[in-house]
Length: 167
Image (cartoon, rainbow, N blue to C red; front, top):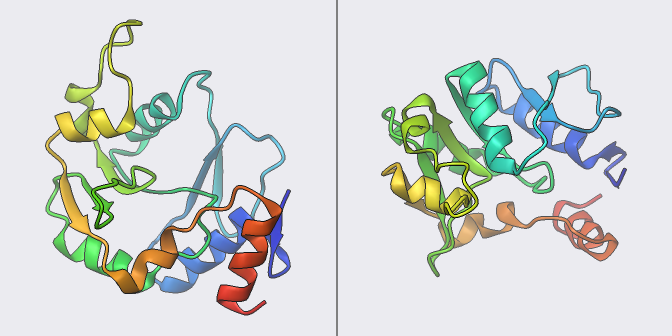
């Protein structure tokens, strides 16, 4: 597993989420049997399908969830706080200035389940399609928070993140 500042990427993200004081519980929902962290509850994802299936399962378990991708370790506390302050029960997702939605940094809830695409092969099973059909709210990502959406895919990405956060 990739490390950042002496922790796994997911561990670094959990540390940031816990340190905000905003969340009473941090839950890791993963298929990876090796993921463990004493600061969070770990639930094994039993699905075999796409990430949409995982989120559907999680929403059914927890009613509403603020989803964070484990490969985006620089969460912005001010932006999270802003999202939560305008959350009124309508699912909400960040959107970049160019219109790109961040489906793995948003609040999902059971209201969305009735808009879940059919599991047939012909149905559009994209997260962005599901979000759009559910009438979710969008919040524009201010320029100063763009770095918090940088996701790690390669070792060079980890080096970029280390420089950004100073470790």
